[in-house]
Structures are given as C-alpha cells and as structure tokens.
Image 1: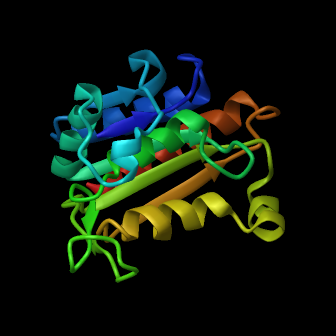
Image 2 (image 1 turned 60 degrees about the vertical axis):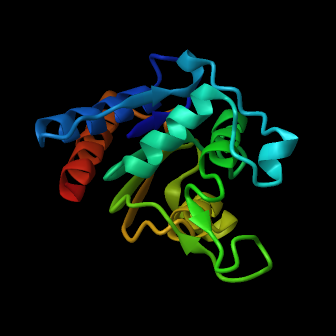
Length: 192
C-alpha cells in the first residue's frame, strides 16, 4: 500500500510515490496507490469513530482493509509545520483505528500498553520539506520521525520503519531531485 498526500498531482511527493510503486511492482508485489486528494478522502473523524466505533464510511473501511492486509506500507507527504498535512492526519486518525491497527489487553484504552495488530512487516515514510534535514533534526527535533516511527507504526506493531526527509525541495536542482528519486527507489527495493 502506497499512500500519497499532496494537492498537486505533479508534485515531487507524487514522483517519490511513483518510484516506490515501481520498485515494489518490479519485485512482484500487488501495489495499491492511494492518492488522498484524488480520492477526496474525508479526513474528519466522526464522534463515534473517536470513541472507538468502527467507521461506517466505505472509503475508510476500504483503506483499513488494505492497511491491515498490507505486507509493506509507504506513506509520502510534505512536512507542514512539523506535521503531516491535515488530510494525512485525518487519514491516520480514521484508518489506524482501534481493533484494526491496535488494541489493548482489556479491549479498551485504560492507559495500558497497546497491542499492535498490523501484519505490515515494513514501512517507508518519505517526507519533503523546505528546511535542511540537519536543521530539522537539530533545531526542531524532527517531529515527523518520532510521530511515524514511535507514535504510530511501532504502536501498531510495524517492526521495521525507514524514513527520509528530502529537502530543501523549493531550491533543489534537477540533479538533486533525480538523486532523491533514486534513493527512494533503493529504499523501497531494500524493504522487499
């Protein structure tokens, strides 16, 4: 499963997602690409979903089904103020759902350690930004690294996570972008 979240279908984020899709397809995987903007994914979690009820939205349930059956997961999005874009955050809230992506020993969140339910053996998170990667780590603490690696994927049972931040995209050269695309493709290939 490859999930991309950027409003411009000609974005560098889409180019990265395409490289992952190609690498995994060439390795023999049945790859499904989910473009949240093209799909018009509704990021607004319902009150019932926020309380742990299963989603009644067929698009959301389709994404959940793909997530829980995916051997590999790639997520591609820009860094927006140290966080994913709002649509991606809504996708996380609705798709990494209780009793699908994780549960608790007593069946409800009572502050216990979660039990990850995902069978996904590896995830690749690719982010773009307009802050130098060293500055992102040293000055801002790279919040996307911690969020994806620990707060979401490890929490839900994904044992291997690779993540890269590509930037500065706004001032990058064609040669830099080509090198980043090759790196993304190699990272995807290495997870097979």
